Structures are given as structure tokens and as C-alpha cells.
Amino acid sequence: MPWSLRWSIALRQTLDPGKGLSAFLSRVSIVGMALAIALLLAVQSVMNGFDREMRERILSLVPHVQVTGTGAPHQWRDLTATLEQDPAVFAVRPFIRADALLMRGQSVSATQLTGVDATALSQYARLLSPAQVEWSADSLVLGSALASRLGLSQGDRVTFILPGEGKAAHQPLNLRLSGVLDSGTELDESLALAHLDVLEPFLSGSSTRQGVAVQLYDVFSASRWRWELIQMVPSDLRVTDWRMTHGNLYTAIQLSRDLIGLILFIVIFVAAFNVVSSLMLVVTDRRKAVAMLMALGSRGSDITAIFFLQGGLIGVVGAVFGTVLGFGLAVAAPDLAVMLERWLEAPLLQTDVYPLAFVPVDIRWQDFATTGAVAIGLSILAATLPALRAASLPIAETLTH
Image 1: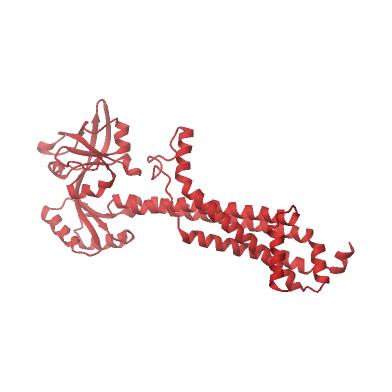
Image 2: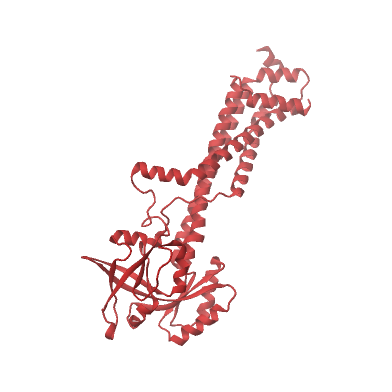
């Protein structure tokens, strides 16, 4: 039997617009495969988005490596100069961090105030409102969620109480809200930035720490850098990296991404089993036609090839439609989330629980190619048993009945 005839029979059994049982079962298998692929690709794109936002948004706003302690001023200058000469270092920024009490009217809440210079503030420029913030001694930048919780708007005055010693002991620090940072991440819940010079008088306090924040070109080399810095700096200085503060979050995102991918790949396996059952029913429905083909001279290999081609066609058509549908769902996911929030009148993601306040999407062609190839391969593999069953049908008995 020529391959053109094999293709013709396989196409007719798979995509025949008529009402035959074979075509109906093939369409059911295609729909099941397409839905499984679309769901997998849409969820994978969302999980990829969380992974990307974690790396590019959250980790770009937090120090990759930081050194804190009570070193002398010349020690910090020497350390900063040494780090700036390293080609792997993107930026080195000094900071002062202090535990403080934030007072607004009758409400008092504990927070952490970080003093940075104007250069460090430029790290957040794209996320600030207004975009240009006058960074002076009484300036203050708060995360959007924190400012909203306190009912603050630009220009409002906020009082901080910081522990200290001597003249600075428990002196109120009155600052004016100059800008609000809206990153859409968990940082909006706690971020409080003040001018570096304002916090210098409080360095003598037990809860105030001085340090330098190091931003690296390769964020995943932070652990190695941490161990190298531990060997460089005095033992009284503490060296940490982002994996110690946000590592659990990143690991949780990776684990969730892998588990969801595994679960949805199992859905594709289930769809492949659906192909097996559908093709077995097709063999039963088409047993007379198969027996007649073999009586006319077709070999078992011809019948086997027809059913393998049918399984492959189910996989290809299902993969194409599933890929298109999955791409559409992935693109529409953020808008669908916004519509659902409006309908429920409640946010789906809140930064006090989740790392992001929005649904991110990162569409990767590698995922689409891999998922489509796996689906086609499973469909062809699923056709093995029905193809062998069809090739072994008894001709005389089938034609007799």
C-alpha cells in the first residue's frame, strides 16, 4: 500500500467532517489533548512570570550581598573601594539601618528605617511616584502598601522614634513623605527610606547598624561572594546574601513551578490514555473495513502504519490548537485576573501574603516546543496497542460476522 493511500485513510478517520464514530472519537481525543496542552502552557507561563519577577524585580531592589556591623569609618571606605574595583560588582552603596517606632496620629507601629544616599535612591527611580524625588535631610520614601495602611499622601509629616545614646537618645525624627514606591512586591509593605546623613547621629544605638550593600551582575553568584567576603572582612562584621533573606521564597517559587508542571504533564499523560481508548474503539468500529483491506492484499504493516499516522495526527492537531489556545490564555491571564478581582471586589494577590500583587506572565518558546513535542510523541506511542490490535484482527471471522 503506498504511503499516499495510508495518509488518505488516516486523515479520513481522523478529520472526516461526517458523523462516523471514528471521526467523533478522534475529535474528542484532539479536544482533550488541546485542553491539556493549553492549560499546561498557560500555567507554566504564569509560573515563569513569578520566577522572572523574583529575579528581575524583587532581587533588583534588595541587596545581593550586604556587610553590616560597627566598623570604623575608614574600614567602610576601604571595603567600598576594594569592592568597587571588582568587575563582577555592579554597584556598592552605603546604608544605615535602624529599628524605629513610626508614629502617625494616635497609631504607633514598629518599622525599620534605612538611610541611603541619592545614588542609592536612583536604584528605585523607575518605581517612585513622583519620579523625581528631592532627596534632602527631611525626605522620606515609603512603600505604597505601608503608606496606604497609614493613610499617608505626599507632603504629610511622619515621626520616627529611634533608640540612641547621649544627645540622640529617643529624639523624635520628623520627616516629610516625599515619594511613594510602588513595586507591586512584598517590599511595599515595609520599605522606609530616609537620607543617610539623618541617621548618622543614631549610630551609637544598639539597634542601629551601618553597612554596605553590594549589587552583582550575576545574582546567583551571591553565595560564593558571601563566603569570599567573610574571609576578607573582620570577624565582627556580619555578611549576608539574598538567599538568607529571600532564598526560601525563591525556592518555594521554583518548587511550585516544578510541581505544577509535573501535575499538568500528568494531565497530558491522561489525555494520551484517552487516545488509546479512543483508537481501540476506532479499531472495533472499523474492523470490517480493516478486514476488507487485508483481504484485498494489505499487509499488517500497512494497517499498523495507518493507526500510527492517526495517533500522530491527533497529537499534531491537538498540539497546534493547544499551543494557540495556551498562548491566548497566557496573554490574557493578567487581564482575566483583573476582571476576576473586579467581579469579586477583592484582590487575588496581596503583598502581605504573596510576593507580588499582580499576575506576571513570561511566555517562553522552549516550553511550547517541548510540550508540543511531548504531546505528539505520547500520541504516537498511545497508538501502539490499537495499531497492533488492528493488524492482528482475524480476516475470515471478521468478514463472516
